[in-house]
Image (cartoon, one colour):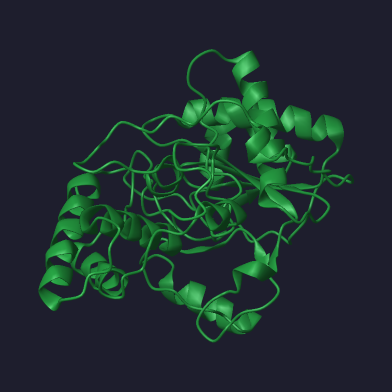
Length: 328
């Protein structure tokens, strides 16, 4: 994936136009107050919104449409400030609120919507669990979703939707998404969401279960949640490589080139085993590119971040066997 910091609107538009129709184009969900020359500075993230992703993959677009209508009833009832988009394979809903200092407060608010859907529909719902990661990406409006296709094999665009558009039904929205839709940016609703204070993790009973192993190595629940998606963030991928490096090295620094190369081979082999043959996760998987990035992590002996860092960055989804880890 080609990444770039755009220092002006013109630079942003130029980059998006150059990539559109060639690849999927993403930008960050959250704004950042400061950037270094090469990256955003995570501590300056502006936590003022919740991003709800209704995932219509695997022929679940009808379910995603059902779910977003249910949630939109609640949004309109509360007159919350929001924007809504059709993503090409689902729906993206942004709810805007007062700025909060903890990503966990946004995660608590998100769970209310999971409860709403669970109370109204039995079985599966399409709301993506990966809410509240400060590194989360979203599709750029009016760019092509290269993973989508209509009955003629043509991809859909990610387009903005208005309240009126909801009355057109899913077929009407699919018709609109056959081309870009350059509407003036408009935020609907009048009320800012108030994010509740999250209880400390120490006060929460129970543990998040570790997912079943899908390769030969186990994953932490937080990393499983972050990477088993269509487009994992760069940092989530790097943390997974660090986790595999730690497991394969026995949590020790690798000293020799031979040891580093051996562990790198095993890490890439495991990643290839998990991601290479999937059509719904890590869609831009490329073994050679992954090896290049993984080499940087392995050869520099980068360890998996401590829980406090994973929590502050929004990766933590609840207590697991690793929490608290002052030293792990």
